[in-house]
Amino acid sequence: MKILVTNDDGIGSRGIALLEELALPFGEVMVVAPTDDQSGTSHSLTLHHPLRVNHITENTYSVYGTPTDCVHYALLDLYGEDQPDIILSGINLGPNLGTDVWYSGTVGAAIEGALSGIPSIAFSLVSSESRVYYEELAQDFIPKLLKKIQKNKPSSLLLNVNLPSSESLNYEVEVTRLGSSYYEGNLKKNYDPRGNAYFWIGGDKLPFDEDQGTDSHAVGRGNVSITPLRLEMTDVERLGRTKELFA
Ligand code: MN
Image (cartoon, rainbow, N blue to C red):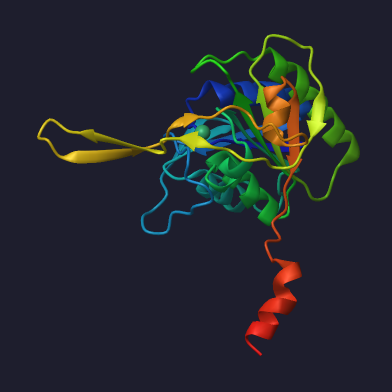
């Protein structure tokens, strides 16, 4: 398989090194990732300045841009006619659960892949301890998933995968729907040395969802969560009522 690996945490993240390592036995791997941490940049595209690219090693590039820029650049310039078979984004160090998918650059890169007609998967590692990540479960599960993909060759696919950060291999795989993702105190106010207020977005995450069948509930129980996503955003049920409104 021709595999494009990208992320939003930046080219220096341990998560992308791990994903590359796990992808290598499955084919030709190309790594194209943002130079800096681009977490929270969603599906944004750089339009107002040029994209500079560093060719780091034979199969590794960093882009001064967003995850979507990386996928865009890789598909158009590096691959050209001969597109990759799959795009893997991550492994994000931190959850992308529920409403997180609207903000996530990790998911944004996978969406860009899916929009281009390439099966794409976003991976995130969910830790209960702050900034401590165990890789054992990811090392066990991701090759199993890639083996299935290699065998089944899906023509279209967009998956959001959240993996518990765990040393234990005692887990189940749950196919889930997006749950909710709540943060406490989403805006922190502080003061600079001159007394001017500034704000920092991001609060503490509240406990995992109680709702069975959700992504958050699954990882809260130490299981792998796989949520299939789709790009069709039309509210089909509301089409009729909207037409009536403007008749
Ligand atoms: Mn990130």
